Length: 138
Image (tube, rainbow, N blue to C red; front, side, top):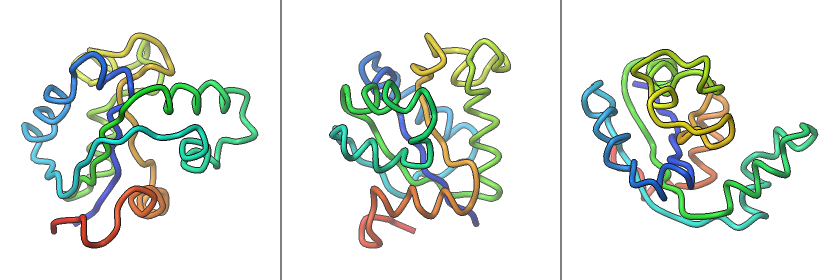
């Protein structure tokens, strides 16, 4: 079994898409083993996205991610990182396949509803950023 982190971003929460995203996990056999809603500060968003600090979009990304509540989840399942990334769709929603979360709900490249870890290493860091061992129900 593999684990990954999912974030429903502020645009997804404010547009009441939490249930729709969770429904897609359940329909695709992806288990949610931890979940909580929080509102990151700019400093917390900067720490989470530190890997991108030299990128030109870092400031707008961290502003956006600290602009409202998010829902963070630990997902578990066979090959869940790649399965979830397929379900999310391309980062640029205009390139995302029909039926993916980003194709169906994103409104721009930054407001693309969801985030997901891209590797086992990033998943381990990202999960531990938001959850301690007592909060994960496996």
